[in-house]
Image (cartoon, rainbow, N blue to C red; front, side, top):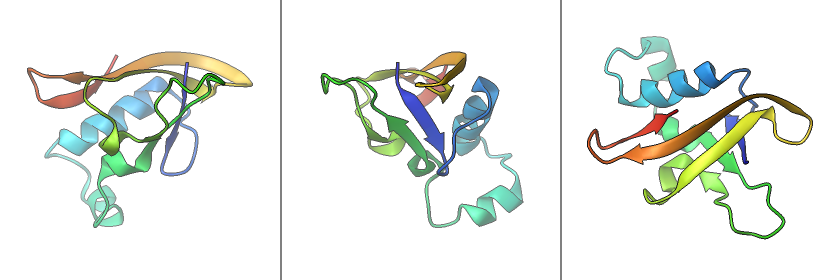
Length: 100
């Protein structure tokens, strides 16, 4: 299980992760959010944190993650507070990242 950050902070729920990632693809994104995020991809603000000591997990921005990877995350903190679990994977039919 990996950790996840959105815009430098831990998300409070899986729904927050889903809203943020889906908002990148949604044309109806809040204009204030769009203004705040201008110049930066929303997916650049999603950081996947590797927690394995073996070095076999992806660590970095979601926008740079290979499409062949699936990330299983836990939050809000993978070390101390595991309130929700989820997965982020590439949906080749929709050509986008999805949160499960």
